[in-house]
Image (cartoon, rainbow, N blue to C red; front, side, top):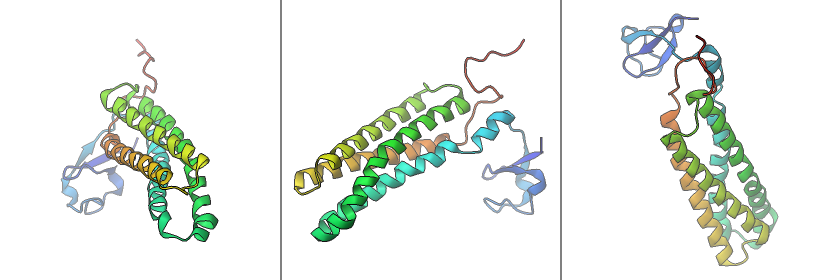
Length: 198
């Protein structure tokens, strides 16, 4: 395994051989680096470095935000533009949203098992609840676009309200997720029921 070093100023971790005169993250002199040992096993580190869950999370976040913009601007466009372009785009994006959220939830379970060996810690349960709220809001949005085309103010407002709930849950999930990105249990066990060899 390659020798690793960590910046004492900002916490940036890198290979010792790649270190130049300054920290690539914060710019302090190389003297601020100290030896660092990765306590996560090689197999788990390999999986974690792929950042599967953080990458998958971007799809529903982007869809939720873009849908909110499109639907908020919907009344500003003429009927021809609404019918020809905006409405089909809103329908397709709305139908994709619950599937992207389900993929995010599944990747979150996998990430939690690899990172923490469990999915029922207080922070992870809070993320799951928010994820289910996001999923429920996306299902409401999908039902609305499947049963109405925003010809009346009530259906449009209901979609916007569900979209705002989804956007709020997505934003809080992103904030909470960023706090968990750099933590992981030491060792190389992936699943929590594996026992140590004696």
